[in-house]
Image (cartoon, rainbow, N blue to C red; front, side, top):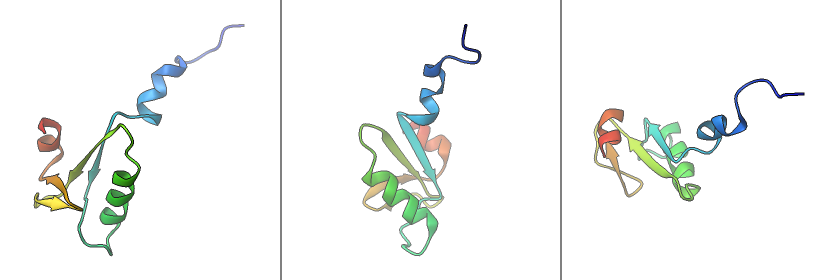
Length: 74
């Protein structure tokens, strides 16, 4: 019997992305954007983590981009 639905590898981009963007990354330790950015950076492995903060600058010692479009241009 044939399996229905998309092939298993079609979901690889969802479960094992090569790049992730943390929109709302923050240097303020009391904000969720800081917690999520810190965890993404500490467990990035081979994946690229792009930090997006509307003011740009640095977040957790990494460059932050003012928009997702600017991060994509990198």
